[in-house]
Image 1 (tube, rainbow, N blue to C red):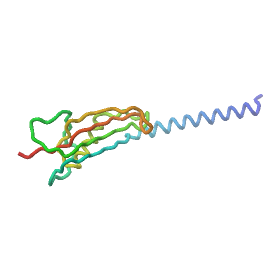
Image 2 (cartoon, rainbow, N blue to C red):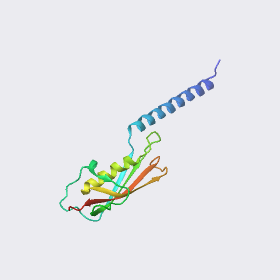
Image 3 (cartoon, one colour):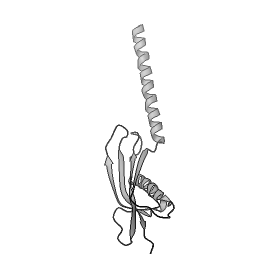
Image 4 (tube, rainbow, N blue to C red):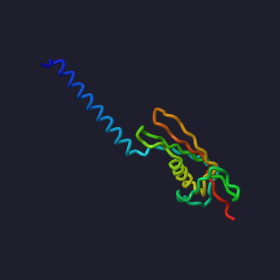
Length: 142
């Protein structure tokens, strides 16, 4: 026959196990839905006089410099994509490129050049992140 103390201990263990299972399930479901969060920054150096915002998908991402066309610099753009939970996929260059394109589009840019990437370790707010920086440019009209 089990004593009250043994029964109480068994109930507490059951409740603790249920809480752990629920917490893991909740974290997993939230992690599966989240894309992560990102920050962007623009440091304008010039303006694209009379230019409208450019469709983001049409902006070129170039890791080097452009040597075959003259261009004007619009400013530096940077983006950081963070992994919110351990269950999210790791940030990719494609994710960072989309953020860079979105910021460059606001400036009316044609391309982002001299793009470089860097990773940041785990922090208090993310399980890892990927940074991207580059220069938004507009090609000179011939």
